[in-house]
Image 1: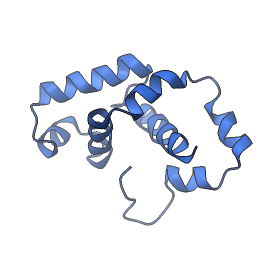
Image 2: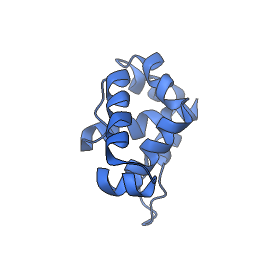
Image 3: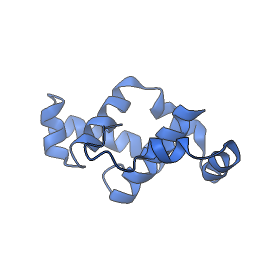
Image 4: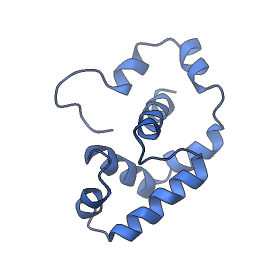
Amino acid sequence: MPENKQGGLTPEKVVESLGKPEREGLLEGYDLKNFVKVFEDGELMKTLSALFENNLNVSQTARSLFMHRNTLIYRLGKIRAVTGVDPCSFSGAVTLSFLIALYRAK
């Protein structure tokens, strides 16, 4: 997860402030085995991290990863297909950010 340069609210800080019952409640309704496939894949996590660091800008993310834009789009499509969440949309990025923080907090 990218560092918040303003020192403000981050998914990690929010998750850390929650008790175990609250964290488990947030996970209800998500098929975590599909998300774990992404969270445990180093290349896909590197891709997500770069996408978030580049403010969901696909072209800038591809440049930062030194890959062709179409390769990045393929990876993002794979994440979308596995999780059912679009990492390029704001709401999808927020959802994935919180799910990653919750997964790491286990």
